Image (cartoon, rainbow, N blue to C red; front, top):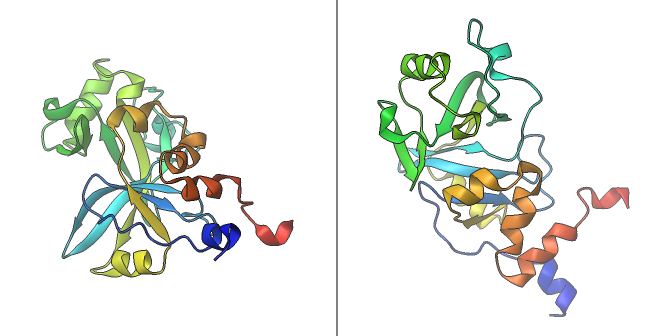
Length: 196
């Protein structure tokens, strides 16, 4: 197999999916939601998997989505196609927000919404301490494993700091560059090879 064939035939990296891992979409995944996406798995088990697309920001403020909420400049992302009109959130305030679940060290999922709104109203939260999402990404039992066998995703991990500080437009490429050099070639692949 020559170098080009090796690059084009990259397979799933055999890292097992689990809560807190990241899914990196293969470069030619043609899907409005998942094309060149990075999904943070918020849950994975026998009942299936769910997570949030963390690199697809939308140009709307959270106070435009939730009526009556005070102005708050936190980023809003397209989280996935499931319950796409509902709001979900990741944050760094930890157990201060009751009912939160830690996904990776320093990054938490969900929590008491009323308490969150009160924290925002009382200006107890910095804009960069929370990310909001419209919808989430979900997989039925064994569905994600099937997609991994079809080489649709690469599984990896990253720190809370890396996830929050890397510009969302560069997250997919930055994660690939941190993997094996063969995956780094994906960064230069055109999004639509037929358009070349």
